[in-house]
Structures are given as C-alpha cells and as structure tokens.
Amino acid sequence: GIYMTDNCELMCVLHGQRGGVTQVQWSGCGNYLYTGARKDTSILCWDVRYTQNTLYGIERKTGGTNQRVWFDIEPSGRHLCSGGEDGYVTVSDLRDGSNVASFQAAPDTVNGCRYHPHLNLLATSSGERRFDITSSMDDEEENLPSGQSCQLDSSAMNSMCIWRCRYQWKDMAVEEDAANVVDTMDQ
Image (tube, rainbow, N blue to C red):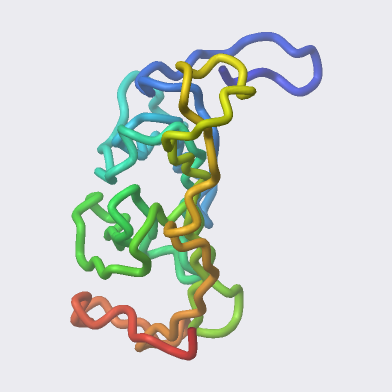
C-alpha cells in the first residue's frame, strides 16, 4: 500500500504480485516503482501517478525458488537486470520492459545483481542451500525415514562475480546495441 507520511492514511493498494513482495525500487525520476516478489516470475512496473494498473511486467525465472532474487536499475536509468534460478542474468529495457540481453552468470541460482553507481561494473551473487538426502546406517536424524541422513550438497556453486559492461553510464546512446551490454571481467 501507499500511505500519507503525515497521518499514515492509506492512499491506495497496488495489486499484482503473486508472492510476498521482497523488493521495491524507484526509477531515477521517481514516477515509476518496480516491485519483485518471492516465487513470482514478474517484476512489475507501476506509474505512481496512475496506479490503476501496471505498465508492464519484466519476466524472470524465479517461480520455483523460495529465495529472494534481487534486481537493480543501472545508473543511467535505462536498463534493469535481474538474476534467475536458471543461472542467467537478464537485462531489460525500462522503456517497454522488453528483454534486450541475457547471459549465464553461474551454474546455480543468481540471487543478486547490483550495478556500480559510477563505474561500468555489475556484481552478481549466486548459489543457494541445497540438501542431499543420502542413505545411512545412522538413523539418529529426526523427521527422516529410517536409514537416511541429510547433508549439505557441496556441488552447488556459491559465488560472487564482477562483470564489466561495455558502455559507460554517461555515454549511453539510444541506438546502442543492447546485445553487447555485458562482458566478462575477472571472476
């Protein structure tokens, strides 16, 4: 909901997310609000001057994970990036919500994306806790069938990577080839 700050009066309620809202972020101009939710495959864009409906949804692959998956808007305000449970980062054009680029950042869920405020860098984080239930002669584990134990699966990749974007925020042109938005840097 949106409330008045002086008297906490409810002004309106924004309906649309399927899961519990886990992130909200304003556009640089302050007219648009982007919301993401747990187990929801869309980041919704709201024009806060006209809150009847969303403007568009930005699709991402997060419907099967209970994790919070963060998104970010790059400093020039033109693109939004988000991770997904498929290990990919997607970059969307904020003029219409269209997907303009994607790349595989990790073999596991990419749960965080954050642009550097001044340099053409993008940081991503990945991984999640996974448990492997294996057979065991020791059945001291509670709540598991007899003969099974629960161990942390170490084959999942938990990492943080820094990526160099191929443009400077201040130099971004409308005609830019969006397919070349991100390039690999030291990981």
